[in-house]
Image 1 (spheres, rainbow, N blue to C red):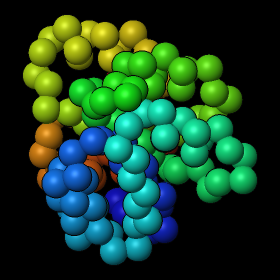
Image 2 (image 1 turned 90 degrees about the horizontal axis):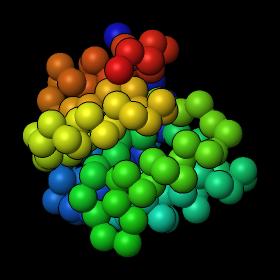
Image 3 (image 1 turned 90 degrees about the vertical axis):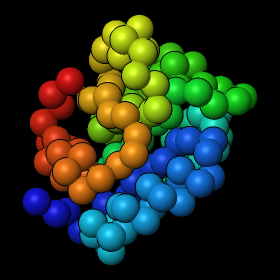
Image 4 (image 1 turned 30 degrees about the vertical axis):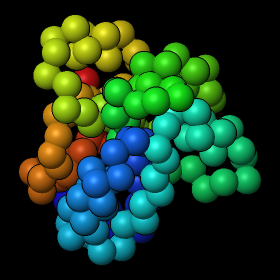
Length: 131
Protein backbone atom coordinates (compact mmCIF):
# COMPACT_ATOMS: atom_id res chain seq x y z
CA UNK A 1 0.00 0.00 0.00
CA UNK A 2 1.44 3.36 -1.01
CA UNK A 3 0.08 6.74 -0.07
CA UNK A 4 1.59 9.39 -2.29
CA UNK A 5 2.43 12.91 -1.23
CA UNK A 6 2.92 12.00 2.42
CA UNK A 7 4.93 14.36 4.57
CA UNK A 8 7.38 12.44 6.73
CA UNK A 9 9.23 14.12 9.60
CA UNK A 10 12.61 12.65 10.56
CA UNK A 11 13.91 13.63 13.99
CA UNK A 12 17.45 12.29 14.29
CA UNK A 13 20.78 13.99 14.93
CA UNK A 14 22.68 11.58 12.69
CA UNK A 15 22.88 13.20 9.24
CA UNK A 16 24.16 9.99 7.64
CA UNK A 17 21.17 8.10 9.00
CA UNK A 18 18.84 10.84 7.77
CA UNK A 19 20.40 10.63 4.32
CA UNK A 20 19.85 6.85 4.23
CA UNK A 21 16.33 7.12 5.62
CA UNK A 22 15.41 9.72 3.00
CA UNK A 23 16.88 7.48 0.31
CA UNK A 24 14.88 4.45 1.52
CA UNK A 25 11.66 6.48 1.81
CA UNK A 26 11.93 8.12 -1.59
CA UNK A 27 12.90 4.82 -3.21
CA UNK A 28 9.76 3.35 -1.66
CA UNK A 29 7.64 6.21 -3.01
CA UNK A 30 9.25 9.09 -4.90
CA UNK A 31 6.32 11.38 -4.07
CA UNK A 32 7.04 11.35 -0.35
CA UNK A 33 8.03 14.70 1.10
CA UNK A 34 10.56 14.57 3.90
CA UNK A 35 11.57 17.18 6.46
CA UNK A 36 14.34 16.56 8.94
CA UNK A 37 15.24 17.93 12.32
CA UNK A 38 18.46 17.19 14.16
CA UNK A 39 16.85 17.44 17.61
CA UNK A 40 13.48 17.28 19.27
CA UNK A 41 13.41 20.96 20.25
CA UNK A 42 13.47 22.21 16.65
CA UNK A 43 10.85 19.63 15.66
CA UNK A 44 8.53 20.83 18.45
CA UNK A 45 8.94 24.43 17.33
CA UNK A 46 7.87 23.35 13.84
CA UNK A 47 4.89 21.35 15.15
CA UNK A 48 3.68 24.18 17.38
CA UNK A 49 3.52 26.59 14.43
CA UNK A 50 0.00 26.24 13.04
CA UNK A 51 1.10 27.76 9.73
CA UNK A 52 3.32 24.75 8.96
CA UNK A 53 2.03 21.75 7.09
CA UNK A 54 1.71 18.96 9.62
CA UNK A 55 3.44 15.67 8.84
CA UNK A 56 1.55 12.45 8.29
CA UNK A 57 4.25 10.44 10.02
CA UNK A 58 7.05 11.19 12.50
CA UNK A 59 10.12 8.96 12.84
CA UNK A 60 11.82 9.72 16.14
CA UNK A 61 15.26 8.73 17.39
CA UNK A 62 15.97 8.41 21.11
CA UNK A 63 19.56 9.56 21.60
CA UNK A 64 20.02 13.16 20.45
CA UNK A 65 21.61 16.30 21.89
CA UNK A 66 19.60 19.36 23.00
CA UNK A 67 16.36 17.34 23.40
CA UNK A 68 16.32 13.55 23.20
CA UNK A 69 13.41 11.47 21.96
CA UNK A 70 11.84 10.89 25.37
CA UNK A 71 12.08 14.58 26.28
CA UNK A 72 10.42 15.32 22.93
CA UNK A 73 7.64 12.82 23.71
CA UNK A 74 6.96 14.40 27.11
CA UNK A 75 6.15 17.68 25.40
CA UNK A 76 4.61 16.15 22.28
CA UNK A 77 2.00 14.36 24.43
CA UNK A 78 0.57 17.80 25.28
CA UNK A 79 0.15 18.92 21.67
CA UNK A 80 -3.29 18.78 20.15
CA UNK A 81 -2.40 16.71 17.11
CA UNK A 82 -2.97 13.20 15.91
CA UNK A 83 0.16 12.44 13.91
CA UNK A 84 1.36 8.84 13.68
CA UNK A 85 4.68 8.68 15.51
CA UNK A 86 7.12 5.78 15.38
CA UNK A 87 10.34 5.40 17.29
CA UNK A 88 13.23 4.64 14.92
CA UNK A 89 16.38 4.02 16.88
CA UNK A 90 19.49 1.91 17.22
CA UNK A 91 18.54 1.10 20.80
CA UNK A 92 17.67 -2.54 21.40
CA UNK A 93 17.45 -1.92 25.16
CA UNK A 94 14.21 -3.36 26.54
CA UNK A 95 13.99 -0.43 28.95
CA UNK A 96 13.78 2.01 26.03
CA UNK A 97 11.11 -0.12 24.37
CA UNK A 98 9.13 -0.31 27.62
CA UNK A 99 9.47 3.42 28.21
CA UNK A 100 8.27 4.16 24.67
CA UNK A 101 5.15 2.06 25.31
CA UNK A 102 4.23 4.41 28.17
CA UNK A 103 3.60 7.23 25.69
CA UNK A 104 0.12 6.92 24.19
CA UNK A 105 1.10 8.79 21.02
CA UNK A 106 3.84 6.31 20.09
CA UNK A 107 2.49 3.99 17.42
CA UNK A 108 5.40 1.56 17.13
CA UNK A 109 9.08 0.98 17.91
CA UNK A 110 11.52 0.06 15.16
CA UNK A 111 15.26 -0.45 15.17
CA UNK A 112 17.41 0.97 12.42
CA UNK A 113 18.03 0.59 9.58
CA UNK A 114 14.86 1.18 7.61
CA UNK A 115 13.92 -1.27 4.89
CA UNK A 116 10.96 -1.65 2.53
CA UNK A 117 9.12 -4.08 4.81
CA UNK A 118 9.33 -1.68 7.75
CA UNK A 119 8.30 1.28 5.60
CA UNK A 120 5.36 -0.67 4.22
CA UNK A 121 4.30 -1.60 7.76
CA UNK A 122 4.56 2.05 8.81
CA UNK A 123 2.47 3.24 5.87
CA UNK A 124 -0.19 0.60 6.45
CA UNK A 125 -0.35 1.51 10.13
CA UNK A 126 -0.97 5.20 9.46
CA UNK A 127 -4.67 4.52 9.92
CA UNK A 128 -4.28 1.82 12.57
CA UNK A 129 -2.42 2.78 15.73
CA UNK A 130 -1.27 -0.66 16.85
CA UNK A 131 1.61 -0.39 19.32
